[in-house]
Length: 269
Image (cartoon, rainbow, N blue to C red):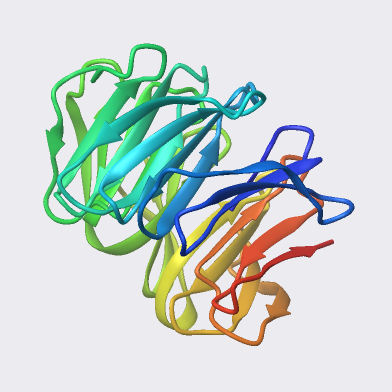
């Protein structure tokens, strides 16, 4: 789940392969379901300029859509399930991570690879551009950081990590692991802070607009928590009737959207 800039609309992917856009205030669907994926949609993203939607699926493809016309712009292929997609801050490229252990970066306009695929240590369950767009972080066991223009390896952080987020200034990187959340220096790899958040894997992270609060969810638990990024203290809990696989802060930091295994999306103020 993710928000458009302006946070009037949000996007979700579904188990039947559809991608939908919703009105935040009314909960009504906007336009048509974006159809084409043949299996579960794991992940969606919206470009910062609001013009493009990217979706990654169990059918081994990333599909890129024109957000206004609903036109399918390109289909980008891996050799395994797509677990993560992220559009660059300049809205020109999309990075994708897959079960095939590859990180691929694509030019949205041409649908071509920006450079040769990067082979990672294991299954790639997360990819995130840094706020400035100069680096890409991938999650495959630990965290690897790459130069976003040259694909040169910059840094490796060892550990058991399943989700990640960057600090607003790009100086720190946050990882969700088995029970713990950890913050590292993104240049040196030094650990800055860690705390226990759940009883199992931390599956999704989203940082608030002011960089002070971290929204989180766990693969096996029905409650999403928000933590103070400085102290690790828990400041909010959002209870669901089933597990919560994904969440996102709105651009202003006012709202949090969660998706639930009950096949519903929830909006929290």
